[in-house]
Image 1 (cartoon, rainbow over the protein chains, first blue to last red):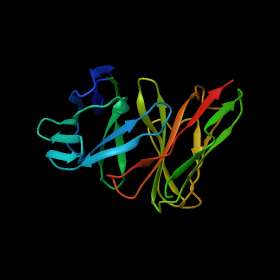
Image 2 (cartoon, rainbow over the protein chains, first blue to last red; image 1 turned 180 degrees about the vertical axis):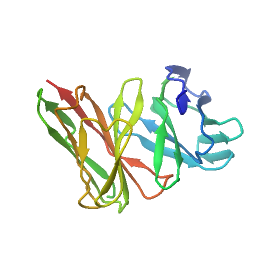
Image 3 (tube, chains in turn blue, red; image 1 turned 90 degrees about the vertical axis):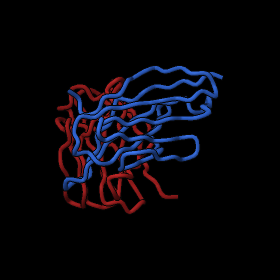
Length: 112
Length: 111
C-alpha cells in the first residue's frame, strides 16, 4: 500500500463549479498536510498547509483534514480556467527530519 | 527576490556521460531536497540535506550523487550508473516541515 493515494484524474469541470480533490494516507505518524499546484512544465507552488483536523480557508481554497479517517481534501470554489493544473497533496512528519511524501497528483481542467 | 533557482532549464545527456544540475536558494533555508518527477508517479525523493556537509539518501538515490558545501547550494550529479535518467528534476528547500518551496525544474533528456 502506498503511503499516500491520490486519484490521478483527469477531472474536468465547468467554470464556476466547486472542485473537490482528495488524498488518503496510511501512517498516522504524519502530522502536516500540504497542497501544491503545478502548472505544466513548472515547479509545484505551495497553496496551503495545515496540521490539525478541521478546515482551513484561504480565499477560494479550503483545505480539510480528517485525521481519524486519514483523509485530506482541497476544495476550490468558483473554479476558473486559470485553476487548470495538477494538484499534489503532500504529507510530512518531523521525526528528526523534515520529510515529505507526495501523492501522484490530480490533473484538473476547468472549462470556460 | 527570494527564491530557488535551478539551472539549466533543459539539459541533454549522452549515454555514459555525467551531468550536474544546479540548485541555489537565497531563502536562508537549512533543508534542501532533490526530487524526480515522472508521468503518473508523482515526486520521488532522491537526496535531502538538513545542514551543510550532511546529506541522506532518499528513496531512489542509486545513480545520483550530491554535495552540500554551502547552505545556499545543493547540486545534483546524474551519473552514468543511472540507467533511466530522462525525467523532470525538482529542487526544493524548507525551514520547517510545512513550508517546502520548489524551483522551476530541470528537464533532462538522454540523447
